[in-house]
Figure 1: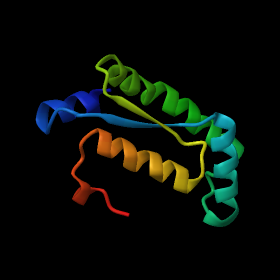
Figure 2: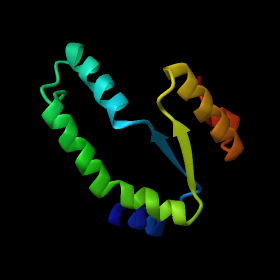
Figure 3: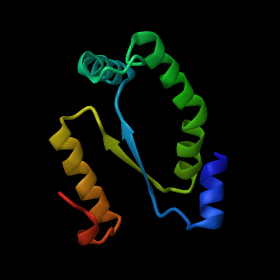
Length: 104
């Protein structure tokens, strides 16, 4: 939370925050699949569940903070990579991010 406030004080006010949503089960399956080829020792069930908890404790307050300011743009991340990318492009356009800053 401190980092978000400090960013706004010292750099710029956030126009919006992209929040990628999908179920923990979907994230768990994706991370375990990644672990099959990534070589990362922390792509295991125990480490992943700890990361989920850390996210809830440290990142969700930031999402809630921006939600109260009506600055959260939610993306359904349970879709395919192409589907998520399409949603992001659409939302960036809605949020008026200049097209030259949205790359393919």
